[in-house]
Length: 131
Image (cartoon, rainbow, N blue to C red):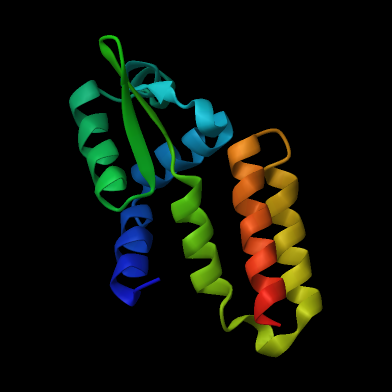
């Protein structure tokens, strides 16, 4: 991952509302939710939410797909995996037990969503290949 891509993704999460939206979408897994449902859940006006979704989308952390008249937003697990790998690349001075705990926590969080589990598996496989 390029440094600028990581910076864009991290800076898009460095806002309380965007981080809350992102975390909510993570809980929904790959199914996602329509923008209107997200606005209701977050208790924010649609136009305010639109700006937050646009920023997260530009950073590549979420995607939107059209279903009928709605746009369904969901987390881009490939992008999250790439960001996690970038952050763990030089992690822990080679202390594999720390990396193992981090990766186990990611896998535990992903246990109910196939796309999330695929991302966690890809991160784990990449770390194993790098060792």
